[in-house]
Amino acid sequence: MSSRDNDCLHRFVFERSDVRGELVHLDASWQAVLERKDYPAPVRELLGQALVAATLLSATIKIDGFLQLQLRGEGPLSLLLVEVTAQRTLRALAHWGGEVPVAPLPEQVGKARLMLTIDPGTGGERYQGLVAIEEASLTATLENYFRQSEQLDTRLWLAADAERACGMLLQRLPGRDVDAADWEHDVCLGDTISADELLHLPTRELLRRLYHEQDVRLFEAEPVSFRCSCSSERIATMLRGLGYDEVQDILEEQGNVSVNCEFCAQLYSFDRVDVERLFAAADQPEVPHTRH
Image (tube, rainbow, N blue to C red):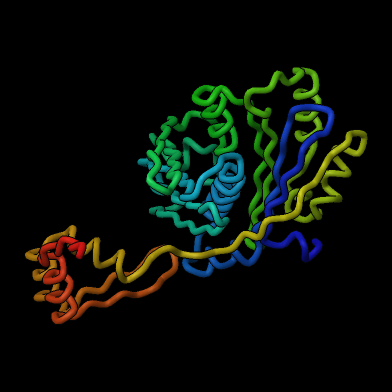
């Protein structure tokens, strides 16, 4: 694969039809996720697909905040959580217990639901959408969500292995009267792509192979990277939310309060002095601004 396609997102449009597309390749960013935990192959594949899907979907909306996909279930795989910011930084994790089978999605997660959260940032109202896990794959689940909840035709092709995670999205442009035959033609050609091609072909070669008879405009790539948004300040806020008495109980039992970020493995430790300081700061009344 061309180095230019490593950890990047490409947008493209079909010049003679109102259909847009995106291709994403995650390499070092995907490896950064895998370094944090040793995921079994079925969990790793699904987590990579979810991370690719979230990255693709984040590029279809204008936000200053983040997009989050969260899958919670009662089966062997109990949690998938991926988050992509407007700056194309991402993080992801999964929880599982016992053996996760190589099987359709409902058998892996049991009774479950997928939540899509969009935080627009800059004081905007957060949006959340829910969909039950009934389809055989994450791809079909997300496509069904967009078809029913957003009334927006969207198709996804997702692939992930131990080295990289990649995917493609096609979507009818909102507010446009897209010719049904054009849409079906573009989708049918997309359906000929294999997981191996998604994972290993450079963007230009992949588009040429799929759509060589069409006029496709490819835009400049956007870089994608792993980055965790955890911080001492956020952990301190979380501890304040637990309450002084509960944090004191942890101190008595353990000698200090240690919090390990599951996304990036960063360890945050608070001793007795730290705890007293953060709760004292929370109790300080706000001083009104005085204008002279």
